[in-house]
Every structure is written in structure tokens, then in C-alpha cells.
Image (cartoon, rainbow, N blue to C red; front, side, top):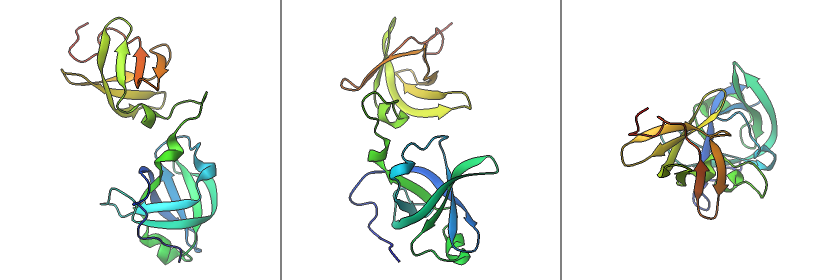
Length: 188
């Protein structure tokens, strides 16, 4: 079994999903992922996972095969990994958190940003100036949503054009044109 116990020590990891279920009798796993896209999947060659109550990977398995799969409105992958050869072994992993190395989620020049990349960025509104810091994300089926925190509280703003005007990765700033009434502490 190519299973490493020190999976979380050399790199930073991001939880991207869960082992949802066993798939078939040969030990395949159905991995349900949180996002609707997985641009990182081509470079994904190891399954990093942990038990439900852990916050970083505890085990690592070499991925032998993977394919995209949708199951009951959940989007993900069916994977075969070294060391998991029957349904009993795969069922023991159900509920485990699944991670990828953080560097998989860094956009290249001219590519769309991963939301994770703007975490901690200052948000500058073209009329109001500094309106807070990106502290998290939300979403709906139509768009990504930034959770921004200022001195008054947290609020949500769609991360879409024409609201999002520009990103300055070097200065770690987002220039936005936020509609009146969305900024925490602001009245209509």
C-alpha cells in the first residue's frame, strides 16, 4: 500500500471535497467535489485524505485511474487508488475529507483567478474607497460571491462583471463598483 502518514507536512493543502461513497466491488471511490470546475484535475495524481474531524490530510494514495462522474446532482470523480482493492476498504474511507496541494489553485498569467487567491485582498470601491477585506466566499448556482468584512460587519457582494472591475495581485486589491446598500453599515 502506497499510503503515507505524513501527507500534510511538506505542503499546504486545500479541502476540495469528500469521499462520498464506494463505487463498485474493486475498491473504487466516488469523490464529491465542492466546486463545479476542476481545472486542477489534470495534474491530480495523489488522493490526499483525512478522517472527518481532521483539518489536514493524514493519508496519501497514488491515483491509478480517475474519471469525471455525476451522481445524484453531485459532481465529482470516480478514482482507483493503490492499496484500496475491494469494497470493504473503500467503504471504510467514506466520509473522509479530500485535499489537493494549494499550488494547484494558482492561476497563470491571463487565466481566471481562483477565488482562494483573493482571500485577504483589500476591496476598493471606485466611489467609497476601502470597504473591507475578503474573508470568505459563498455562492449560488449563478455566481460566486465574496464575503467582505469591514469595521461594521460582514456582507456579501457578487464577484461578477460589472461589479468587479479590476484585480491587482501585486497590491492584493480588488477594484469594484459595489451597488448602493450592499456594504455593511450602509443604508439605501
